[in-house]
Image (cartoon, rainbow, N blue to C red):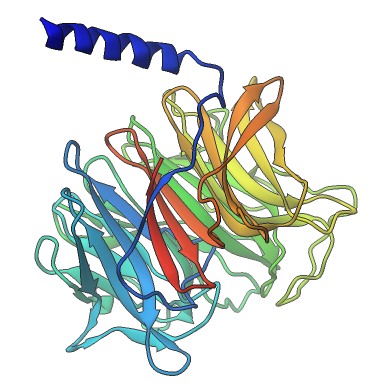
Length: 424
């Protein structure tokens, strides 16, 4: 009887908490320091270094750069099992742990776990030939399987982002290398989990004089793949423009805009579904660094219960020196844009999740005692902000909502060479 009463009290309390206005009761995330040393090169904005698995018992896999020799790093997966115990899984290149030159913003790992429990890791690719690793056994240390990729030996790629489909297949979006026509296109690949083979799905975006920058891949409950990417002047630039969206249906092989209209791949800047259009004084400038002026830098997406895209991105407004955090949603036939945060400079570290009823936006400030924050809508286009890692100088992050409805956090502290696992 007492147990039943306690359960009723707990149920009512949980219901009341769920009805609180957005932002009420928010608190810092629960953080655990990953017990392995991280290399200072473990920092990127485009990557997908985090994978989760399991209901009830929860597993997390955190691909990261570990210290190598001078100006190099080794690739590992920090594995947290369902009991909270840690193990360090090496990514193997033959008989040695994979080791590559440091290259901040490029040579970082992305990971996915297929429906059979095998890890897929793409690591340290900056206009390089394939550096692809896959487990030969369930949960085993990934081995070099670069020869399995279905491209010519001349292929070069950058910015591999990964996601796992509901049926256990794995999808890869990557920018291909220099093209003789003066563009760098984005290419989508599929790992057929049942057949254990890779194939090229399509060139999804290509425009002469422009380079494609992958941002994110997310599946919805219907099995459709949502794709997010940016464009820069050819050959490259740290400042990008015209953030774009695309949806792919594996069941039909067709591509769509957010309004449901069909579109032919590869999309170009004249046909793409553009989320953030060019501002009045925004222009493409070929610059390996940051040429200044308005533009986009980093973006991530989630989908709501109806399969509608929710996007967070960093955008420097005309006349500003700071990248603000922006939010885009699609409704009534158009993209609706809001500013989440614009008071100080932010890092190229953002992410977004869908809770089942609202979005959570994650971002990192450039400096300060508290740097990692979560923002949720508060009504009237406002946002409530919560520090999720008080006192920790977080500079990069990745977030994934697991099967139990918990946001799992991958938080990078470059200053102290620490990686944190978080629950929010």
